[in-house]
Length: 253
Length: 253
DNA sequence: TGCGTTGTTGACTCTCGTTCAAGATCGTTC
DNA sequence: GAACGATCTTGAACGAGAGTCAACAACGCA
Figure (tube, rainbow over the protein chains, first blue to last red):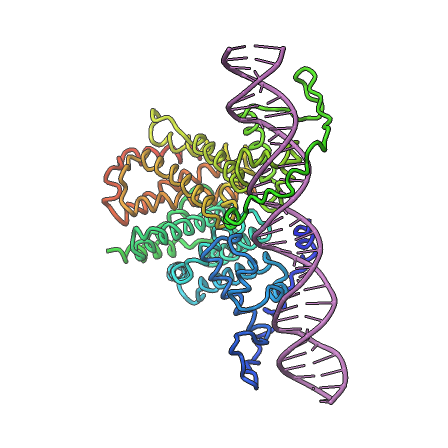
C-alpha cells in the first residue's frame, strides 16, 4: 500500500524545477576546499546531474530491481535519503533518467529545416544512429520500455515516439496527415527501432548498409501508404520523392 | 536475482518454529467432495492453468509491481505459499504467463505450407491480428517487454520474435538469408508490431486497411533489401513476388 | 554573530517477496 | 479399511529493501 499511495501523492511532478531555470553558474569550489572524503554539499543541479549520470550507467548495466537504492547511494557516496530528496522515489529517479535520455534522443535527431527533404531524412537517421551507437545502453533501456507496464514510463516512451513522429510528418509536409499516412510513418519508426536494435546486437551489416536500407524503406513505406489512400500523399511533392530515391540509390553504386 | 541471493544467508534457524501447533480448527468440511469455502485440492495442471489464466488477467490490467503475491493469492482463493509451490517465485509466475502468451502467438501465426506464398503472408498476418485483437492485453504485455530489462523476460520475448522471424524467412525460401535480407525481415516484424499496437490504441484505420498496408509493406521492404544486395533475393521467385503484389493490390480496387 | 535556507544524514517503519515445517487430502497397497 | 507415501496446501515467520522523518551541517546574508 505504501508504494501505490506514495506514487499517487507524488503525482505533481517535481522535476519541472530543474529544467525551467537555466543552468546556474554557481560552480563554486568551496572555500575550505575540502572534499577529500567525497561527501560535500553540492549545488542542486550539480548533484542532480551527477546522480543522473550515475543512474544512467547503473541502469544500463543491470535491471531495475537488481539495483537497490542502497546500491545507488553507496556508488554515489551519499546517503539514500538524499536520493529521495532529489527524486522522490526510486521510480522517480528512474523516470528522470529515462526522460533525460529521451530528450537527448529527440535532440540528436533534429535536423535543420534548410536542408532539402531527402537530406533531412538522411541527417535525421544519421543522428539517430549516432545516438544509438554512443549511448547504446541508454538507447536499449529507453526502447525496451524500462520498467515494464509501468504507466509513467510507458507514457514517457510513447510520448517521445510521438514527438519524433510529429516532426517526421512535419518534415514531409504533413501537419494533418491522413490516418493511413500517419500509421505508415509510425510503423516506419517501429521498423527503424527494430533495425537499430538488431544492428546493435549483431552488427550483421555495416552502418552504411543499414542507413541505406532505412532510407530505401522510407520511400517504400510511404509509397505503400499512398497506394492505399491516394489522397494521403496529396501534399507530397512527387519530384521530391523521386529526387530522394535517386539520392538514396546513388550512394549505393 | 537479488532476492535469490538471500537464500544464502537464510539459515534454517529452527528456533521458535514449532509454536504453531494445534492453533487452528479450520472451517473445512469436505462432506462429499464438494467444498463450501472454496478450497479444494486440485490436479496440478488444473490448478496451474487456473492460476495462469488469473495471472494473465491481472497482469493485463495492472503493472507488475502494482500486484502483490497476496493480491494474486486472494483473487485465486488460495494461500500465497501455493503460488510458490507451482511457480517458484513471483517472477517465475510472470514468466510462465508470458511464455504461454508467446507460445499462443507463435501458434496463431502458423500457416499451412500448402498455401501459395502470397496467401501464406496474408494468413500469417490475419492470425497475428486475430491474436492481437482477442488477447490485446496479453499482446501488449508481451511486446512491451514485461518487466523492463529483466534478462529472462527480455530473452523470452526476443526468442519468440526469432521463432516467428525464422518461420517467415523459411516461408520466403530463405533458410540461410543474406544479412541484409534477414535484417529487412526482422525490421519488418518491428513494423508490424508498431502498426498493430498503434492500431489497437487508436483504431484510426479499419482492420482491412491495416492488413493491406502490412501486405504492401512486405513487398516494399523485401524489394528495398534486394536492391541493396541483389544476391539476397536469389532464391526469391520473381513471379511469386509479382503475383503477391497483384493479390494485395487487387483487394483494394 | 545570529538566523533562515537548504543540502544531508542515518535510524526507523512497513510492505512484500520468500521460506519452511506442518497439516490435509488423495491414490495405492496389503 | 488401516497404513502409508505422495503431493497439494496452509499460515506464520523472516529478511530485504523502499520509503519516512527529525535532526544536523554547511552555506548565504544581514
